Image (cartoon, rainbow, N blue to C red):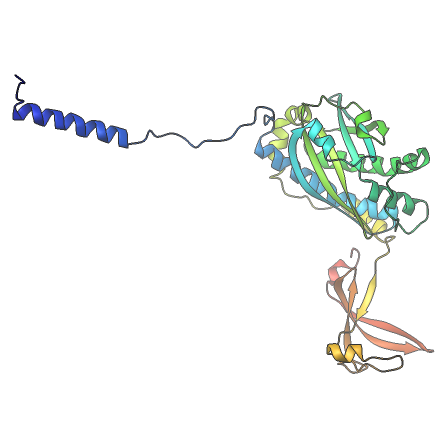
Length: 325
């Protein structure tokens, strides 16, 4: 015959069952789950990556000025991205054929890489040989003569990079080799992690990319300085640097456009014929805006002398910038 449980035994069983249920319903506290790719271990911290971006943004600003003076045209260089990738992934970013260089980095005895996209490379070569820099797209390797010409730009880029790194470490960049096919130069093992810096380069109306590969060993060797470099403020120019900047910028041609705006209905624009006159919303002696390289810099008035029309400048938006536009 089955034994009948007492009330105390029933209460004890219910208490145990209730406690077990609560234990099962309470999840174990764990930290956030973070994905980790063992094929791409992060050897450089986020703080150091921020520092690298800061260093190369400063170098890009200075190089925009020096390249503009050297090529005597408007050059814009800016940092598009900074990331750490395997070297084979860095090669996958590059064009083929292209202007590819292996770069020696002293005093660490390391090898990096620099690539200039073919579009902007041909534009700069054309500019250096006396052309306008407006070249059609060409899907061919650079000739030996063209490589010798673009070498001058590469050395200028490497000098600018050394200046940008000067706040962190005294590095010297030099050309070790060059090729039109990136796979033909052995710079690093395919799986080796490198820091890849991508620049956006604009030569006149031609836009392209410049890719820089820096070994992580260089960043790790200057770990302390790199981590704090991006927090430093930009120093003021010395009188010698300002004089050099003013002298070199003085040789760069920039478009100066006196702008007079008016509005017409679309039907009126379509009905315009040669010889018709468009009325402007200002009198002949009204002030007009003068734009330099697309930015309003001065105010002036229309004037004429001996049958020639010109703009008489009456004021500047920034009188303190009379030396440097």
